[in-house]
Image (cartoon, rainbow, N blue to C red):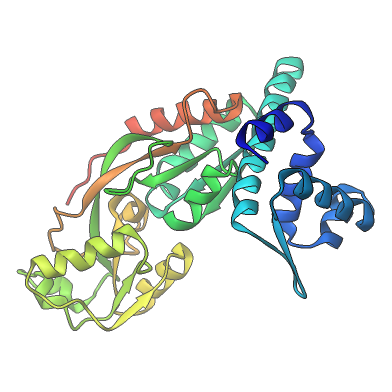
Length: 317
């Protein structure tokens, strides 16, 4: 099918049911599961998919013994289908908010830097004003959250903004600069040292973020800039609960955004090692798809995030 014919077919004959069908098949990877969720019979769903593929002249899914596997065409079609459905959900939320007052749902992806600082404060403020809004928080790494944001599954992503590889279709708003600190349990032998540098810590046990995270790459770069080898005795984790317990029960050295560690430091549960990491200070902020795309509840949360960021205390390093 030519590009012009394809556009005419989408404009005149393409139906919302086609969008739901492709998106559901992409998510479930199964005719049976998708049919159940769409309340259709398997033959009806199979026939509908065949009709769509025949009209497009493209194969969207490969049929295998394990179920469905999206082709390159299917990946593109499903991505746009999910965005269309997300926009319709936003429209429904806005209409419902207008009809009955404050309601809706906000889905936020968060990286470590924002999860323990501005996000809880902003959510508390939002719920006080709009108790009918449901807030869903998804914790993950940058490489996991970005595809979900682009697909419309997330309203925004909060955390350390990337230094490189920013996408043109996304907006990046900086809230504040977040310094990084090295933390240990109180009473750690290294805390008695007056002078301490990264070269003194190479052979210590370390608790670090995953290799694919920006923070991990920055830490490794800091060692190289200090003419020191990267530590080999490493535990890799982005689980805050696991990390806090490990740091308190071992002699591991942890790497944390200052405001994430601040509560534990003030309560005497963790201590900061006297090692300067000025080169590891990157902006914390929000990543959005495009201006005007946020539904009302998400837009309200975004404004509260801006207010919470203004109240973030200065680092005392």
